[in-house]
Image (cartoon, rainbow, N blue to C red; front, side):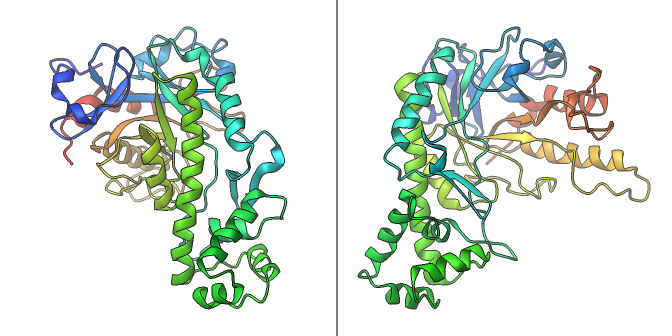
Length: 397
């Protein structure tokens, strides 16, 4: 997988104390030079150049072209073992509460109620269902649970209600509602008036807070933000610890990727980093800016970038450049920066194939609806992928 004349790093090239995983399976570690790498079952380092592939299409669409594009990894929905694929793969799986009504859906947030007594049990049952099929496959990098969850975003120009405010505003049937109020009142001697004073917000009763939330009015005072951070850490800790424990119980050999929001609270990344082997995140809104730190963790934790694409966004023509040229130039800059980041261990292109509504050359897939190759994407991806390991080797913290 390395460029000609540039041998892959060996196990002796790594800081032993940083290596995570099980010998004989894919591991992850930090090289003595600084960058993080995946380490194959053969003890050789590699950088994951991937693409997402729906598990239901594995046996119906050819996978052979991927290797010619420099792709060495598939991210496959549902934990389906990829028949016909000889490279590495990541199993994207979903954990959900045993009862659908235990899913928090409010103000754009979609998260399980981790305070529900049935949550940890549901994780164990889900892991028993999904994980065993890949347990003995040394090509499996690891499990990536719940890439579709929606955590609150970090307050921007127009802050939206954050996680503590949302949980305080749920219906009483949610365990998270009671846990949030117990958490808050315990810090203020059980007095709502003391909470209101600390948060510098009039709160004559609990219903007044619920009204603020449903009107999309965010609490954003220093006192509230202090409690918000503490609550989010606990919520994230319960989520990542339950999911990780469930997977480990059924598959202790493979790595676990903790999915964090690109523009979400730092507390989520911190909690994930304490439970999982590496982080996974999707591009933030400004990923096109080559120098942007688009993930949490910096060079101190290995990160896999999921759902990457240079399509979308504003593509107005500029002097001397067509919209297509602008898109590809922006894409080259962004993806090259990702590959050269010392914390990166790989990335995955968002879509294997176009959707019916996509129109070349701005479709999202590497394969068109008619089965043809989207060379406007694959030609550049091939160039970047084949040079990825050399560029990553040259990166420095």
